[in-house]
Length: 430
Ligand code: SAM
Image (tube, rainbow, N blue to C red):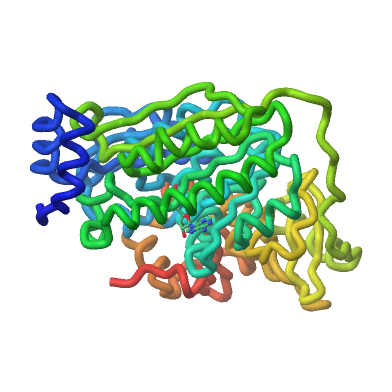
């Protein structure tokens, strides 16, 4: 373990007193790893039965997780298929504690998407989830994770909290603020957090968190909840942050507050506070999501569905952008103009005025319902994820490639080969 900042250790000693030696000793152990099964696709039991030895699954965590000692699981085809998400065990407990997820949920600091994808599991496809990440490059990773997990009721945007607060006054039922923090609980996992730590940085993080929380308060409807979390131990960013918030917002009360330390819980450490805004009359409703509807594009999609799904047509509002991209938009999605939208609902595909070309997201969200499916072996799945064309006699046309019954992506069968349509930026690299 790299040496930890002296001032940090002194603060921890003052904070923890007698239990400080146990805290310090926890740094002798390797970082604790967890994975969360995507219960939108399969149960924890089904995953455990499927997982090969390399996953080395250990004890269960919360509602849908496992401790794991597996290496490089992010490169396994099951990861690309969205069957699980690698998540630090104490971070996983926040999603597990959520009770009333919806119908309107905002994840304000969402990338890379651990908690977004967990909330989506809890929502079970109902309501709307807006996942925001201020950093556009990180928002793209978040968007890929939402797609991989087959989430249908989410929009991914990249805006600063102030922009969103002006757009959504008293709008959301639940807001998660998983705040950018000094990362004291990340020292083992991300060594770069160690030299970045200083008391000045703790203060800077606390000031930034206060601004984000104030924006969240404006966006919360009366009777709604804010869940605030960090992966740091500093009181300025945790307990004192919440005390200050409650003093400045007398219409809020604390429902629950909890801190996990690595010497008390098998994880790297986390802080969470659940806050409620006192109930009052109903909030104003915003106008619905507003983009062009296109009857010809919808007919082309219906024809595609007849062949591809054998009759099944995904339910919902279909919207077509001016450039031909089509989306299945969850009912009640608000107007997101100005919030730098990356993804909304399920990307169905593109219509060029003549032909409809399905999107990868369609396979990830609805692929199990496809009529034309080609089962792959693990070896073939890896080749497919690398972008290779596969030799296979199959009925010509669009098809879903599946591994162990779960969709991996799309291919197009033509005369004994299956052309690879796995998105280039997502491909597996050795
Ligand atoms: N919730 C995420 C998850 O579970 O995967 C982790 C979020 S991480 C702790 C905090 C995020 O806040 C980072 O992605 C960071 O880019 C973002 N962030 C940084 N500055 C911000 C700001 N001023 N307002 C909102 N978000 C910010």
